[in-house]
Amino acid sequence: MVTPAPPGLVVAAPSSGSGKTTVTTGLMAALAAGGAAVAPFKVGPDYIDPGYHALATGRPGRNLDPVLVGERRIAPLYAHGAAGCDVGVVEGAMGLFDGRVDDADPAAAVVPPGSAAHVAGLLGLPVVLVVDVRGYSQTLSAVVRGLATHDPGTRIAGVILNRVGSERHTAILTAACESVGVSVLGAVPRDGGLEVPSRHLGLVTVAEHAGPAEAAVAEMGRIVGEHVDLAALRALAARPAPVEPWDPAAEIARAGGAHRTRADGAGAGDETGGRGPDDEAGDRVTIALAGGPAFTFAYAEHAELLAAAGARVVTIDPLVDPALPAGTAGLVLPGGFPEEHVAALAGNTGLMTRIADLVRAGMPVHAECAGLLYLGRTLAGRDGAEHALAGVLDLEGRFGPRLTLGYRDAVATADSVLFRAGERVVGHEFHRTTAAPTGGERAPAAWAWRDRFGARVDEGIVSGSVHASYLHVHPAGHPEAVARFADAARAWRASQGTRVKSGDGEVAG
Image (cartoon, rainbow, N blue to C red; front, side, top):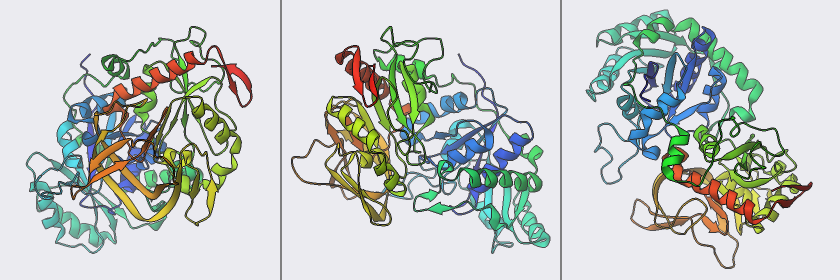
């Protein structure tokens, strides 16, 4: 059903390092503290900022990335994530006009794919600029004018001055913005207490920094609430054109998976353990989804699609959970920071042993980035100390000196529990580790693509029922892969009969 989505706005900046995440999170928290139901979004393949957004709003932080899911899904995903809310707030990535780079002509696109401006245009939302004004005076007018006129389809509705030095500084900068017809919505003073600890891939995740993160988000909300005109900002929010909201059940149905769903609410978020309500009938299958501090790079839509495909999704923390949920027939290991927690992961030998046993028995496993490393033989963390891990894949992982980052146009090189050979995806790499084969016969690669010089790159592994890769693929862009994985888990469970052996004894399989 086509329905109107709540009004929203995009918060962007001239560049990274402007304090955009701090201001956006504070804005979300301040609006929520004032009684608004706020839908939080992040442009691009970012897994860390949405955690802070969720903390500020009490709702799942979601990503809007037209490069990964296609332009046509952006408005439906916004409508889905903002259902029942009063306002949507979308945080941009990097600078306003920073997106996917065309190596053949980096300046070819006025509005690059995947940029904040691109998403704002797809949704028809205005842009609020956050500008780090340290060192700025009257020149700010030229910067704001340039951004406001670069693309006629991108509407700059206002500016938030960040890190102002004094009242006089604020007055000069306000006059500079107003001279080019752009209103100033607030001026946030310099305050080092608002910074959140960061590391090699960005901010420290909420899951790793829970207490201090909560305090930081509360302080962000307090300061933004004091120094930004929230009423004026909400008045600028625009309502996107009505669309049919993204629906995981409809996506799975179109994908043609052999799934079965029920209306009793079982599925994602059901963490009761034991047999699910459909297990006796044999149609709802238990899939474990790794979470916790080491596995935080997951999209909210993944669990929703798995549930729509007939799965009972149970979140586990491989740092502390001693066993998989009863009856587990599939395992998803998303990205994260295993290099930061490798000693604790290695110490949980019971869980790793059980996972290795189930992989040898053919249980489907979907492993991305952190999951790839976890399934390897060893991983050396940031301190260089090497630890033994699951040993499912003949790989040695190591923290490295270079960041690997970027979109990839990839083609599946082998049939797997997710993709068929020849299927194409756009994925994203984001890691500072390497995974080198330890020798012996190599399994088929999961993906192949061309680097910017035209050379072929083979990446990842398809080994039996395991699909493991550094490449992050957004599930909303490929619901057929999620349906295929759930079907594979269901088929594997059926192949094991009514009982399978767990580390804790006999459980339903």
